[in-house]
Every structure is written in C-alpha cells, then in structure tokens.
Image (cartoon, rainbow, N blue to C red):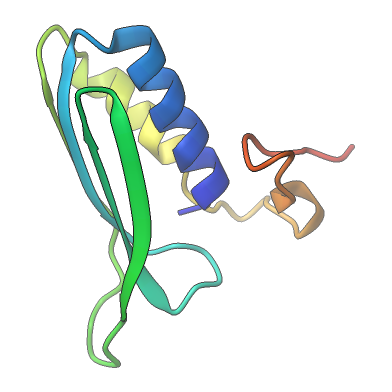
Length: 106
C-alpha cells in the first residue's frame, strides 16, 4: 500500500460519507516499511500507526474492513486498489505533497 494514497482516500471517504461509515479497521503492508501498519476509524476520527515488524515467514498482506450502510462494495474495492503500489509507480510519483495526496510527474 502507498500510505499517502490510503490516508487521502480514507480522509475523503469519511468527509463525504461520515453518516454511512461506522467503523474502519485495516492492517496494511506499507511500501518500503518493515513494520505492519494498523489503521482505525470510528465516528469520523482516523488514526494509524506502525506496529510490530513483519515476521520472516509471514505473508505481507493488506486487509481492510469498513462497516457501514449504503456503501458500494465494488466502488470501495476499486478505490482500495488505487492505493496499492503498481508496476508503473516510480520514486518520483510517490513523493507526498504536504502529507496528503500523491504528486505525479510527467
């Protein structure tokens, strides 16, 4: 996961759909980090932090659970996919702007 993308999406989702999103929980494998990242959201409050290091034998997966109503699962899946590192990402395109969003060069 590209953390800046994920944070931007979560912030936007909660701002736009705060009455529909009850709870968010995620365990993320963040690009270029050796620790798993735990993210939680409740009542519009979002918090994330690095936790323990990934174990050698452990498969690095990112899991996200959003509890709410009137949420389109397909749209949420598509938006989460946009937060994942892709083959076309370059070091220049992953530079954060003020901690939010992603700058794309070219």
